[in-house]
Length: 109
Image 1 (cartoon, rainbow, N blue to C red):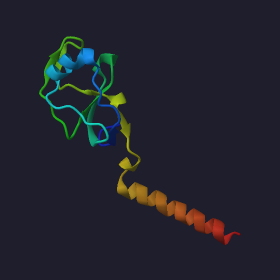
Image 2 (image 1 turned 135 degrees about the vertical axis):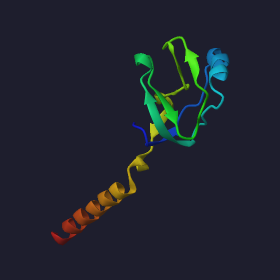
Image 3 (image 1 turned 180 degrees about the vertical axis):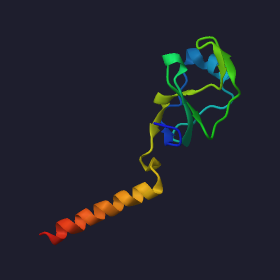
Image 4 (image 1 turned 135 degrees about the horizontal axis):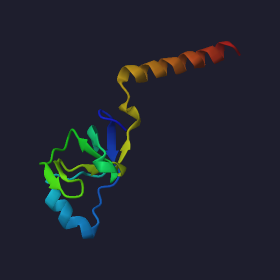
């Protein structure tokens, strides 16, 4: 995954023991089966890769674990990249190549 990719949320569940922490850190939470666009990917000092989304903006907070202020990021494992995330021109080019290959196979029979 990379910035600009379209993704779908596959897990919006919050562990009960982390519920209070999540409510404190995130004003806006994600929704399962909703599509989003990756705005930025954060390494978070190698602890857990997180993503910021175009459609969701939360206020930056200070996180002791990474010792800095940043917008709370959603764990990347909560999302799956959508297949149609490639640029339309690239997708169209791939379809044209498949059609040409199929026609070539048909004419060689």
